[in-house]
Image 1 (cartoon, rainbow, N blue to C red):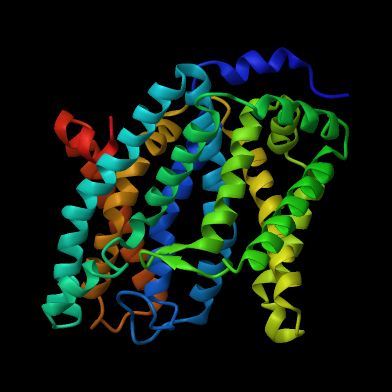
Image 2: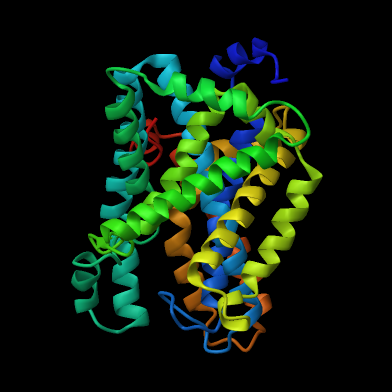
Length: 375
C-alpha cells in the first residue's frame, strides 16, 4: 500500500526541510573540491593546471560529476514545487527569478570579469583573452547552472501557471509506486523508460548534441530537466518521496556497483555502445541520487548550526569559489609541494575565504545579500 496521504500536508507546509537544505548546500560547496581537483588532474583542460598532476583527481572529478548535479536538480525541482504550491504561479516566478537572475548578472559582471582579467594577465599573459572569454562561453564559467534553472522555472510557470494538469499524472504514478519493498525499483523502471524515450526523441529529431550560446548543451539540458521534473514529482507525490527518502540498502549497493562500472569507462575497456553506457550511467546516477537523499534524510532531519550555515552560505561559497581556486592554485604553481598537499591547501583556503566573505560581508549588507543571494 502507498504511504498514508496524511504526509501530503507536510510536503505542502512552509517549514524548512533541513536534511534537503543541508544536502543542497553541501552539493554547492562540493564545487570547491571539483574545480580544485581539475587543477591537479593532469589533463591540462581547465582554466589553470598544475604541470605535475595526478590521475586520481580525474577519478574524483568524474565521481562528483556522476552524482552531484543530478541530485542538485532533483532538490531544485522539489523546492520549486514547494514555492509554487505555497505562493502561486506569479509569486513563484518572481521569487525564483530574483534568486537566479540577480546573482547571475551581478557575479557575471563583477567576479567573473575579475576572474577573466586575472587569467589574461597572470596565467595566459594576453589581455585580449578577456574580451574573447566574454564573446564565448568562458565568461559564464561556473554560472551555467543558473541559466538552466531559469529555463526550468520558466517551463514550470508556462506549463502549470494557467492550468495545473500534473496532479492527474502524479495520481497515476502513485498507483505504480506504492510503499512496499520494491517501490524504488518500480520508480527506477519509470525513470529509465522516460530517459530512453527522451534519448530516442532527441536522436529522431536530430537535436542530440547541439550547443546554444556556447554553454547550453541540449543533451545536458534535457537530462537535467528529467531530474528537475523528478524533484517536482517528489514534492507532489507522497509515495515517490517516500521511496526516494528511504535509505534503501539495495539502492546504495546498486549506486556503488554501477558507479564503479561507469567510472571504469566501459566504452574503452569492453567496447560497450554509447546507448548502453548512457543507460548504465543514468542508472548509477538514479540510485546514487536516491541514496544521497535517503542518507541525509536520516542524518540531518533536525536543524543544527552546521546545517544552517551550509544552507545559508552555500550560494555565496559557490559564486565566489571559482575565482579563488584559480588565484590560490596560481600562487602555488611554482612550489615543489605534492599535488595532494596543494589540493588540500587550495580547497581549505577557498572554503575558509568564501565562508568568511559570507558571514562578514554578504549576510550583513542588505544590498550585497540582495544582489549576490537574491534575498
